[in-house]
Image (cartoon, rainbow, N blue to C red; front, side, top):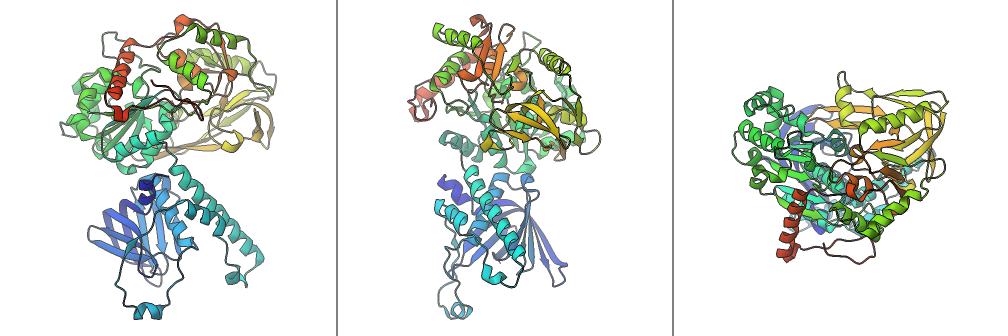
Length: 618
């Protein structure tokens, strides 16, 4: 755990509304504060207080017997009810990860038995100690361990209550303390190189971070988004599938200028629509994932639109840019061969003064030989040894337990045809599942922003893929493959490689650039005999096969091959060394980044090849 993050767990900056109640619980006074600082502190008698300051607001509330309401915590909102002082605080526009960590810290410090015994009231009055307010010590491993072991129900206080009530209270406390300890650890689980990116974002720099497949770019980006105030942060991506992974919207949807192919004046007319203009003006932090698939000319047009709409001549109208992507993977679709294709080739990119980071630590694969192979394929360098290993995979058997390998196709139409044909060939009764979408008229947008369709048709024997993490410990994660064995109470039972389970409906929540929330509830499954390479970005597949004969883009073969965990779970049919190449402009861009790293040795890094293995320089 980083010390700075642990210290930050006792403070948070947010918008605040405070209400004071009377005996009848009616509001007698109310005040709002756009920017407030909340600090967890102790006095000289070890009493725990929440200190609130900001815009004429100065409060110190005793942390004891309080109630937290966290239903909308993912939106940066929470409520804390101080019953003893009859005060309620409503927190909003708080960075999500900071808010979660702050509330967990309050709980741990409040329930910790390590605290000193309470000083009697008489001694407090007679004490000649000065009124000292001290910051609480940061959470450490001992605190978390103590919460796991020492939070128990005080049975003596519940002697007159029913045994069932006591057991229920113990059960709830046990559940919550596990959530506290696990969430705190997970919130602070970034690697050293990922933390450097996060710190640069927190310092307000424009940032671009890149890295090969499996280096945790999406994981880091979600953490960055959760560390920023949600009301002024817009998370976007170049495609609907990518935007869903980070809980955002497409870049085109936020920009509001359509395809952007019209003149600048036409784009400005579209962007000046009231709702679109409001989105642009409210935004302070613009996140763009898969920036590598954004056309260079579109990026430049966005810069010009942002400057005009926000009436600021700084790059992108003064917005902080957080860009993520790998230009050595799938490139943007470009019909005009004379147009600027990549964002890094534009003048807008140059003037954004982006601080660039290359993530080097691979998390998807652990085999150093396979990682080394993928690194070579990424830059289009195929040695005879690599080609021989890939050709040999064509004859190996993968999958098992009735689970077939997913075929990755170069075209979406081909993948859809394979899935439809295989489903029709199964002589079982089909069962249709229709999604429940909130609000009318959102279905088309949710089709684009979520990985699940409005309707899913399944049969016993269908090959399916899980589209959400259900149980990580059992291997039930996004991308897990299985076969549908039966229906129980109307729900599909799927046999995966490791375990079998009944798959229930899940909910996908999408926050639009306007701030509105829409959602879809559907089975987290899709047919998986075949998948397009384009739709596979971001996935880790436990058994995958592909034919690379129809590859038509630089980086396409690399994206397909890097979905596999290792060589033993991969089968390549009709391998052709001519179908693996990298774009020379992109190679030159990355070569310059590498030269910069070597010139400034303090950021020169190694490529970790997995746990317990030696490293190699780039």
